[in-house]
Length: 264
Ligand code: PEP
Ligand code: MN
Image (cartoon, rainbow, N blue to C red; front, side, top):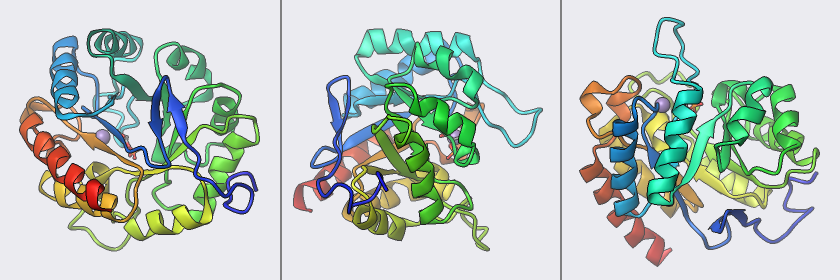
């Protein structure tokens, strides 16, 4: 398989408009769960840039469990992301939820995010596989490592080899955490595949106090980067405030992660 270490021995380095992830390059993505307003987004963007992130994350289309929850600003949100890129130089990572939206999201995004709920949306995988945009493929919330790698294969066999995997926690019997962050999967996937793997300790734990230690653990385990939810004021976030870091805590995280990366 194209995704396998047997097919390619060297680590894949994904180049996002000059910013590299994989090999020895750590990619740090941070920003709010959802784009809420231009002001909120710019404040988050400036803060994460100052702390050393290279990518701004933020959903314009949100896959919410309830249809009554905030669904995202859609194209208006994409516009705000583009403005934040203009002002900060950060690369944009944002979710595309269905194949019909791949065209429009590609006009704004530097990295197309496939969410956990869509990991086996094979039509969507094939559609992003036909683009030349790097893809961030989140692990399905009940997907085995092998199913996750097969999902990456769907993208690659359409011709797009720029796939970044993301461990974001899986469903287990545990309820204290929102999901169970499977850091063993990072080690396993680095053996099985040449693709870069990043970790999302925000969705992986659901609790902001656990984000910094688990981010450090992810880097110690060999992850090629992180995606972290950061909000200027988590208490009033429209989505995922409980797992979002303040800019000050994100800055602390970056210092600790930097120290671990330097000795690994
Ligand atoms: C997100 O990154 O905001 C998100 C919805 O993540 P996931 O698909 O992992 O739940
Ligand atoms: Mn979120």
